[in-house]
Length: 200
Image 1: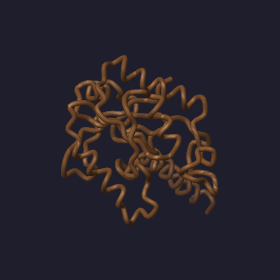
Image 2 (image 1 turned 90 degrees about the vertical axis):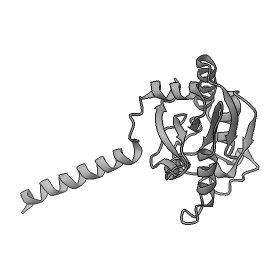
Image 3 (image 1 turned 90 degrees about the horizontal axis):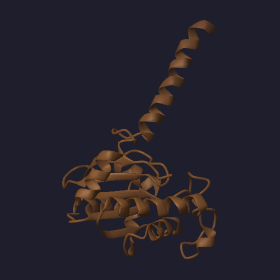
């Protein structure tokens, strides 16, 4: 009896691991940065960026946090600040024209966007995950922003992992860029072009 249960138990564990990989990893390989950079240089695309490193990495903010007080929130550490500066430097080094920068109003996103220094930073609640996923008002607004972008340069959106998951179906790492080609009528408002790994 014990022997007959071992394979099925192993199979269940293997399926769980596989499911986790599918959820976290998008259809394109995360290392496919060449196509992503080429699209951003071309213009008319969207760079959806998860904020830089902000320990503990996953999860929300401390209990009782306030949107108007950065000291009460999860914030970038020095690695996260280095990543943000490196992101901006990578954009400049490759000649990516940035026409607009939108950020979630959370401090870790705003700091990432400002340290990138690729343009004036505006805030948008469309980049904050919906509190009630069934309502989806913010996600609908985000899809409209993405699908309506025509350039000529790049639209930079600095946001949270759960916002990217709601839009694209996977969780990016901190500081990772998801490159999108706007497409009206598609489920996400865009097609996935490539992923650009978090800069060192």
